[in-house]
Amino acid sequence: MLEAERQVADADDPMAWARWSQAVDQQAELVEQISRSPVNDITGVVVKYQALARELLDDDLVLDEGARRRIVALSRALRKIVPRAG
Image (cartoon, rainbow, N blue to C red; front, top):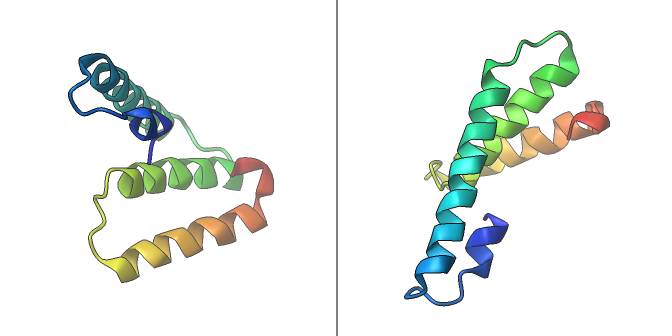
């Protein structure tokens, strides 16, 4: 869940929703930039995977709980292998 989403206290507050929407747009743009970046080593692969996994999980695009657990488990395993990338 995005920090801006956590800060939305009142659904009727247009400024809160504007901040949340801007944060979501910024995250999507960052993931897009990361996905277009060249990969030269395992760290680059881990960074790309982590960006994609975060987008899928934060946007609730993974509906199957088993798949969600496997994505999180792989993220943890990759951070152990390449800690500076996670």
